[in-house]
Image (cartoon, rainbow, N blue to C red):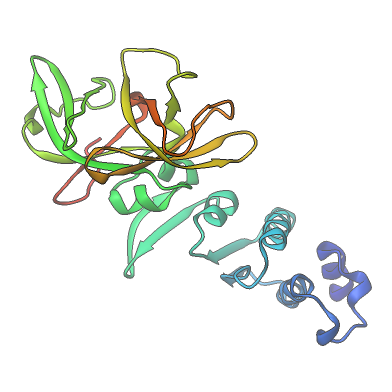
Length: 257
């Protein structure tokens, strides 16, 4: 009875009479999960269960595991090096490095408020753009002076209480989705213009990925409107939304928010 119930949940009723060698990779993954389900455990432990699947089957199986999790109402502890799996499947993420917890919380907590540079670089695809520079103060206003000469205003509402940090070195982080082709960007007080040369253009349909070479060889990635006219080797003007920027201490790597 348990076998039949588990097979129905996994959609593999027709496979129960087959030998393992007659199953595809995705079917074997579901059988392995079924062998765990019939035990009716209190906790499921999954160690990179999708690592050997091709890209399409990985997406399909990921959705199936999420559905099973909700159907069973049982805790799943899921180990993965794929941040996309963690973000899409996890209700709570514990992000570790060298055996130490770096941050834990809901997926969007780690995305919106990374606690340090490691979390900022790990969560998000492509990774957050990071640039080194110095925090400078002009009256009550704070700005970030990058090493390639750009002076970027720091929103007071987002970076309160950092006046005492003026003159110290820091790392500014801006996600690719917060950078837009200037031809499609809205203007605003907390927007900064960045100029560079297009190195790679990756049309994705609903958006286009641009890899831009800035001054001093620094590269940034931007997710821009698919209507962009950007082309390889051409100069481009970008607009960064600094109201969504992140700031980190260069020495400790910890967030300054």
